Image (cartoon, rainbow, N blue to C red):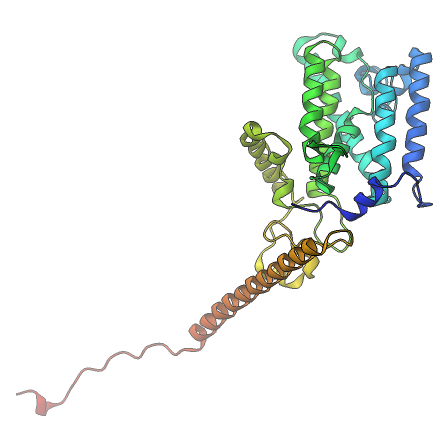
Length: 347
């Protein structure tokens, strides 16, 4: 069984914030609470804090709504849920990512709100229904959905509830989207709330997959097969997830956001920069049993050996190709064959 991230395990097992740098999630929680309180007690504040397409860039120009709308909420139920999730999960992720946690929040929220703005304008253009331009979009649901993707990446086999091992972090993205679809189908939430969850999940995966910098790794993102887009979904939906994942990879590769590392480039990179798609090297935490430690060390040794053998094969292939090219350059052209002449031979 894969071992969960040891740093995340330590965060899950403690109730005290020990790091003096862990202040981002506290400020985030306070901001969500205050803006939710403002939205509930003074609904007219949505004109300035929520993303209303007409106010954001059409009738007026309040572009800052793309930034503030994610932290503003006019529903006390959703506001309390989002604030609680942001505090609990935010503490875990901030301890792991430090300042990258704030960057993750900014990117996911801005990308989601900008996408929904474009969709709402497109819906108005196709239907001429003003409700698409005047409906306020707000809430922290997109970031919380992205948090589920982050937990799936960091500790996929960690139980969501310690005493219940049926639901693990790797199931969170599918569960969150399923709940959003059910709530929308029952009329509890609106279509824009479903869009927040869907795009929050997608952009969370996209950022972690291709853009997130990791310490000691020269290549951005997590290219492991265990974090492919199809793994966010249950078995029957995985072929569709694989299709969308391939489309995303093709677009990112076309735009130059991701590259396939070839042999010569891989030789120049440090070993930690070799992507984990081919051979993941498991780390050995300090909290596992002796049997698990030996098994992890054995897998690690085999993985390192396989990587070294692969690099050696690439070196030999390149050296052989260079020798053949050099031999072709230095070899003299074939002399024309001389015929047997002489009068004595001609009888």
